[in-house]
Image (cartoon, rainbow, N blue to C red; front, side, top):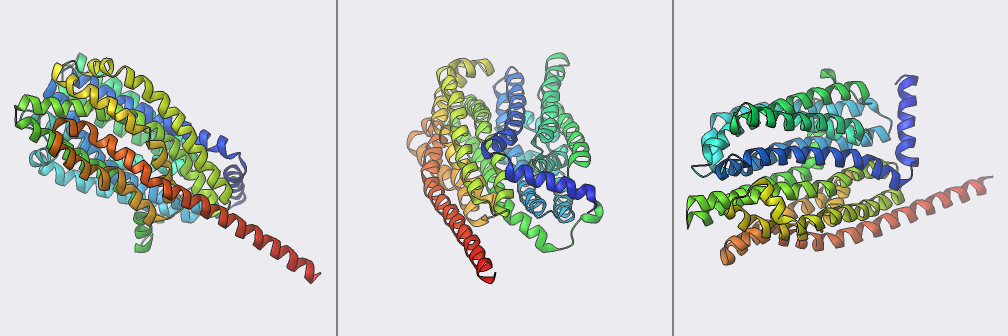
Length: 478
C-alpha cells in the first residue's frame, strides 16, 4: 500500500474502533434502515398497483415474493460472507486481501445469477406452479416472473455490492444505490401499469429496469468510494476462500432460503385450503397473505436495518479484540430495534383494516388479511431479539451457531408450526403460524444472548490480565 492507502486505512480503523458505539451503530444502521424501508415501499407499491388489477394478479405478487427470496438468499450468502472478511481484512489493514474477497464474490454471484436465470426461464411454467400458483394466478406469475429472472444476475451483484459497502462502514453509499432503484421502480409501476395499461407485465418490467439501474449506481459507487477494489486479477483461484465465504454466509442463505421455502409452502397450503371450497377462495387467501407478508416485511426491515448496522461494528471490533465494544453494540442494537419496531407495530395493529383495504378491498381478502396482519404485529415484536443475536454470531464468524439460529424462524419453528396449525385450524393456522414461530424463535435466542455476554466478559477479563502480566514482566526486566 502507498502512503495514501495507509492513511485511508488508518482513518477507517480509528472510526470503527474509537467512535462511541451507540453513535456508530446508529450511524451505520440508519442508512441501511432507510434503504430497506424504501425498498419495501416499492414492494408495497407493486402490491398496491397490481392489487387494483384483481385478486389473481395480487396472488401473483405473493408467488413472486417466494422467487425473490430465493434470489436474495444467494446474494446475501455471498454478500454477508465476503463482507465479513472484507471487514476483517480492513481491520488488519490488508486492502489487497479484502479486494480478493469482494472480487471473487462479485463475479461468482453474477455467474450463478446467469445460470439460475437461464434454467428457470426454460422451466418457467412448472416453476411458477411449484411456487404455489393456481391456474388463474399462473399467467400473471409468468409475466412478472420472467422479468424477475431476467434481472436476477443484476439483483445478486447489487446486493453483494450493497453488503460489502456496509461492511466497509459506507452504509450511506449503499443506501443511495438501493433507494435510487426503489424510487425508479415506484415511478415505473405508475407509468407502466396506470398510464400504459401493461398490467402485471409492466410491473415486472419496472422491477427489472430498476434492478439494472440500481446495479449500475452501486458499481460506480463501489469503484469510486470503497477501499477494496473489484478487479478480474483479484479473483481468487483458492477454493478455500470460496468455502470460507459460503461458510460464513451460510446463515444468510438459510435465513433467506427458508423464507422462500416457507413462503412457497404457505402458498401451496393456502391453495390446498382454498381448493376445498373454490379457486376464488384460494386466490383470496394467497392474495391476503401476500399483503400481510409485504406489510410484515416493511416492519421487519427496521429490525433488520438496525441489525445490519451492528454487523460491520461487531465484525471489525471483534477482530480488533475490542470485546466490550461488541457487547455494547449488540445491546444498543436490540434496544433501539425494539423501540422502533414497537412504534411501527402499534399503529399497524390499530389500523389493520384500513391498511389492508388500501391495498385490496375485496371482502374475502379483508376477512383473511386483517386478523393475520394483527397477529403478525405481535410476532414482530420478537424480531429485535433474535435478529441481532443471529447477525452478531455471523459477524464474529461463529458460523455453526449463526446457522442454527438462522434455521429457527422460517425453518425449524415455522414449518412444523404451519403444518400443525393448518391441519387443526385451517385458515386460522395460516394466519397465526408465523407469529407463533417468531415468539418461539425469540425465546430460543435468549440463551445464546446470555452465552455471548458471558463470553465477551470472559475475553475482556483475560485480555486485561494478559496486559497486566505483560506490564509486570516488563517492570521485572527493568
